[in-house]
Length: 166
Image (cartoon, rainbow, N blue to C red; front, side, top):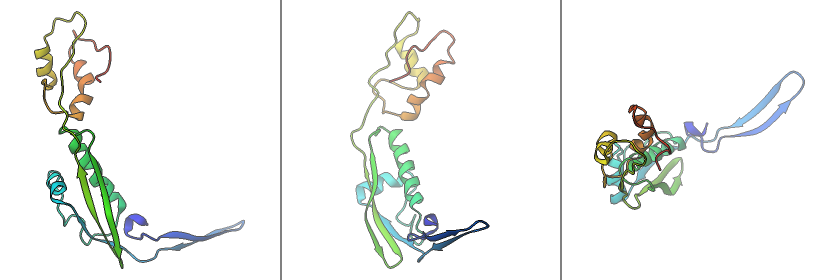
């Protein structure tokens, strides 16, 4: 029920006998988002995934909605050089049945791919592997590309991965 705007929803009491069970629920008032705001720096990041300050306005309160926003923002950050970004909601206020808060995006440091290390006796150049994996030395960290290295290497019959990418 919380996902449908009933923040105070709870089970008030239960009663069971040999033939039936009775559960009394308390729903309380329906809550809705008044607004979720962001400072200018966070707004710039959030706009990259299509968020606007009206994204939550007047919609039923659903904490999973914020979680999905955080997950989308984190995925974007991890694939664009910021694997240690922090996305969080604070300054939460409830005024009557209206909920508001402030979403924050703290990117952390920008990370780059240092290099690809090839060991063993395979006759393949580092430049070829950089091109094949689309991971050039000095390129921006991209979690999705790094997770695909093992499956991409399997496409090359003359290469055998000894250790997963680190």
